[in-house]
Each structure stands twice: as C-alpha cells, then as structure tokens.
Length: 310
Ligand SMILES: NC(=O)c1ccc[n+]([C@@H]2O[C@H](COP(=O)([O-])OP(=O)(O)OC[C@H]3O[C@@H](n4cnc5c(N)ncnc54)[C@H](O)[C@@H]3O)[C@@H](O)[C@H]2O)c1
Image (tube, rainbow, N blue to C red):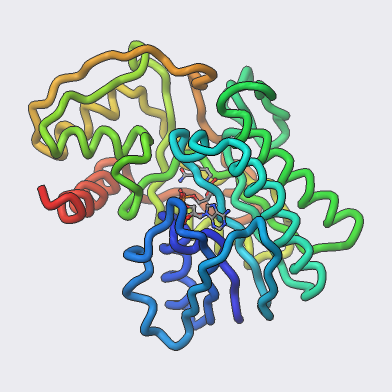
C-alpha cells in the first residue's frame, strides 16, 4: 500500500514510517517540523519508497494513497501551549483535511487520539465508554478539546459519509526520539539524571501515570488498522501504573545517577491518576504491551546519552 503519515517526522510518526516501510509499503511523510525533526527521518530519505513533504495539515493537501495515519499535533504541554490557537486548529482542521481526503480516496484513516480526552478522570481505570472530565477553558483545553473535536469529526464523517475510520486513544508513550526539552516526565527525568541535575517532581509525586514503550504502541496502531471488527475508539497504552516517585527512582537506578528529587507546585488541571483499561484492545486486536518499564527505560536512556553526548 501507499500510506500517508501526517506528523511522520515526530517521535511516534518516525517509528511508524520505519515500521511500515519495513513491511514493504510506500510511505509519504507529511510534517511541518514544528516538533518533528529531519534527523528522525534522515536515514529514510534515500529509500525510494519514502517521500517527505514539508507541509502544514491546516492547509489542504492531496496525495494518492490507500491509507492515512493522522498523527500531526504537538503532544507535550510546553509545545501545545506555545501557540494554543494553532494547536486546536491543527487538531480540528488537520482532521477535516485528512477525512476529506479519505472520503475522496475511500481510504482507511487513523486518528491518533489521546487519553487526555478523559481529562481529570473520575472513573478509574478509564474504559472507552467513559466520556471524560475535561475543563473546556483551561490551559490544556486547546489540546484536549481539539482531540475531542477530532474524534467527533471522525465519527460524523463515518456516519454521514461512510468514511472508514479507526481511532486509537493513546496513553503516555516513551522511547527513543522523544525531544529532550518537551517537558514530558520520562524525558525530563532521564535528561536531568544524565546531566546530574535534580529531578523535578510536580506535587508530592504520588500522582500516577502508565507508560507504554513506543514499539508496543506502534504494534497496536498496525493491528487496529489491519482489522475490520472495530473502528475504535480503542485505548492503547500500558496499564502498569507507577507513581512519579517510583518512575524517578527507576530512572536514577538505570542511569546510575545520584541526582536528588526536588518538589515543585502541581500545574493547573494536571490529572492525578491515569490508567488505561485495555480490554477492548485485548479482545478485538489481540494486543497487549510486552516491553517492561526497565527495558524500555534502558533503550531510551541509551538514545539520550548519544543524542545529548553525555
Ligand atoms: N507520545 C505520547 O505519549 C502521546 C500520547 C497521546 C497522544 N499522542 C498523539 O500521537 C501523535 C504523535 O505524538 P508524538 O508523541 O510523536 O509527538 P511529536 O510532537 O513528536 O509528533 C507530532 C508531529 O506532528 C508534527 N506537526 C505538529 N503540528 C503540525 C501541523 N500543523 N502540520 C503538520 N505537522 C505538524 C510535528 O512537527 C511532529 O513531527 C500526536 O497526535 C499526539 O497527540 C501521543
């Protein structure tokens, strides 16, 4: 197949490009390089089955493809809050442009949605049936509400125009090619530990997150796109739950660092607990994560050591 990946030069997108090329597909990678990097795809540029298009998903685009993966959107709070209006435009207009193209081509289209659509959840763990608890006017709303609106658009195009959609709700994912400065907790801790700086913990560190290694996640994407039983939304994430203190300690152990932990104020609307219920992914996709946290951290730490030269 010929497959379009928006946001293909980013952390997850570049791994997805690699995986699909490895399976013998042709890949068109569309990215405006806001948080993506050419370095992430440099090794693919000489592959005749790979094309890079520097383009913004807000502006219409046409490619003749069989499938579309829509990943374009800054994913970390400092990046999506940098230009909040642009972020929500990216989610909403990016979805409309992908869906319009999918409709014309009768192509299957995938949306990278997020656990953020559950907001600060009052149900735990979160199933796909939970509608969420999202602040519509807060500093995270440009991302959360943009992604919620994109899901609405996907379902409206599906109901109204029969577009063949798939939606994955992605929970925290980590791995090589995350940006060192993106403010996400795994990269923050690793970079701080490698530089011998204090590890910054927001609040008392008792809030929990679950962390999925990128390779597990990409496997979930492919399985969702390769089956006809469900459109989603399907939670894709690792249900193993860790407190921020536990994560900090695991990073210090793997890096072999003696950095100290310092506590800062909790940012506004920071969810206290987040854990996916992955029953649907298990049942419909036969998917569950395989890579343990220590193993994923080791690979990610090795990447950052090289990337930062420390
Ligand atoms: N990594 C996670 O833990 C996680 C969790 C939930 C959802 N997601 C979603 O998965 C997708 C990929 O996330 P990621 O972690 O790889 O982040 P990322 O920031 O590395 O990737 C996003 C990519 O989209 C590109 N992009 C941003 N705005 C664009 C625009 N207007 N036009 C074209 N390209 C644009 C960026 O340059 C970047 O390459 C995002 O949609 C994100 O919301 C990721």
